[in-house]
Length: 442
Image 1: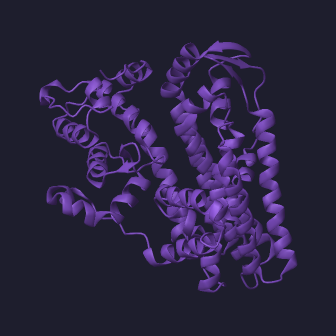
Image 2: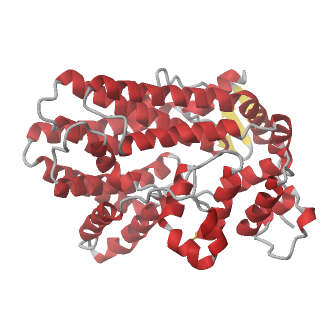
Image 3: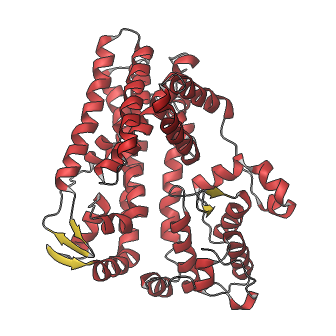
């Protein structure tokens, strides 16, 4: 619970950073940083606070559970910019909420460096199309499905879920071969598939809510129906879509079989490490996210097989980089849940942690020390290598430009990697503070 009593400016402590009002905390940190008075211990506490409050990796951030305050998020952005860090999700959220920020504080508005707002009309067209499908469902399904629908809209801070097909089309050299109405259906299909995916993922992680399983089944089926409407009786294309969905299912099955550690109370039993190899399994798990772009690529007039393969390679490398970025932020939660992501598997090997039983209060700090000293740089370098491979495949396809929405997604991943590396400044103090177990707020 947050304590909103007044805290003297010269008494800012890690405890204060972890427990006081989020807007006040980052406003004061900003003032301190302008005088170069934020040390590694305070910085570590600030990063812990952000991790605990994030809606998605890269922002925005809840000021209270379930509450998004534009002014608080702006204070966070101002502070991070002093460290030459900009977060794509946070910046996109602030761009859309500029009016709300202005109504709260003209000073806050002036601090906002403007970024181009996301296109609202295509986004609204997609979410309206999703809503139109969902509102016809039986009453028993309508309330839970609408709840998931609304939560995903909040989580889709950069509109990537709804507009992934649009972003891809913007990066094509040639004019988009599909009609606007078909692009809306592709975006709606992706959104519905994501609704299903986040529910199924919870079950895979043994955290699923049984009452939401019918929601996942319905939205998964609706996404396939929309793809069928787009391909319009092209049976080969529809069979390909079903094959892509099967690839996702197979990757999920592999994950359940090979990427789990047994957790009992605070004891973790490590038996064997999964082999992710070239990490294409990461792309296979997320393949549903690029079905729209893959269908667009199939529709490009005169595109040959070699070119469409390069497009597929570019999309796969993007998915790998995206998953590494997510795993980079989630590694602690994954370890505590007994889930061996690609990043966790690499950390286990590099930290020379062999099979056996471990207590969390020993294993997690050991990971933290490795992660902050070596793991951040190693993981971010790997992430950046997959971003580069995606760009190279785009160029070799001779079908895509170096601009447009898909390139912006790659830019955002690069920015996220550089942000993580930048946060290793004051490494020794940061490492010491970040390795300490935070105390409960009194």
